[in-house]
Image (cartoon, rainbow, N blue to C red; front, side, top):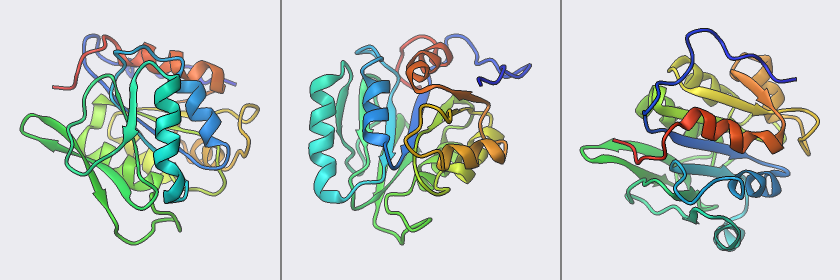
Length: 208
């Protein structure tokens, strides 16, 4: 069941957004479902999918052939731009950092978090700290709790936060934990998430 938007939480019209997505078991198809529903000039998107490193480059290439935005493996230090999707390599955590001219991707081989590298929590916590109210967080199907606390931090920082609903998940673990701790502003069926992202993102302009 979809939660009603809270009073005072509508995003400011005209503000550019950055989207952060985390997923585990069942996430490859869920991510594809979302990305094929987005236009070429979509908001920038950073993704962590729990996946061995030997598969992430081919997964990015597959998505790039199916979706209007450009999909690629993230590279350390590269700028975060509208119309681009950055998938964390399977060997590194992915985070975002504010720079003088915008934002850039940050990769690290630090210790696993929640037994994962890449970890969704690492990405979401950086979104809370660096992007704040201009962020949209989406936590998709997966086992365990990775991403739930990070999504809660994003919500506390003023981001719009979404969890996939029970019926559309392959494994209702990570989104369930997010919903149970109050991290998700709304719980949404998979087929509706792309539309909700676009509704919250506003005009498709690059971050400033």
